[in-house]
Length: 173
Image 1 (cartoon, rainbow, N blue to C red):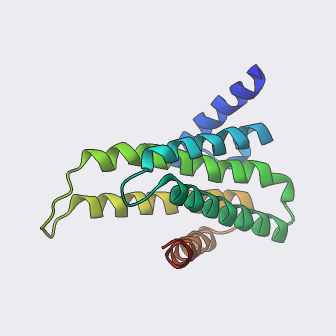
Image 2: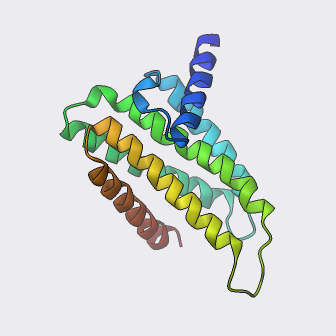
């Protein structure tokens, strides 16, 4: 158990480094337990996202949809490149960076006031900045995991984002 927690804490360090574009998935331990702990933590962080408009069930559905889509992209890309041995590290990285970005973004969103009228709503700019940050980190992970060009990894990341948004709007709204 102590070894698992140690590996997970090392993974958290690398997740944070990946969010700063300083690390890559191959540095992560290939551990199913780390993935499970990260997913469990992601669902716990989901409790902080509960609001009047969104209950915990909706948040859980969105997390599950996100993880399934990212898992399918990782599996498909790695299978296409014949690199399936990297799946655990890649999926762990994808879960972990979403965990870290969500954890960082919650206090940022809560700290800004939400003006009722006005064109310069700081929440819009913050949301856009976090979105670009998330897509850049996803692109880095796809680039390093699949051994592809930056342009192709950016296209995959953006396509994932569009498909995710359409799916959330269609099924969960």
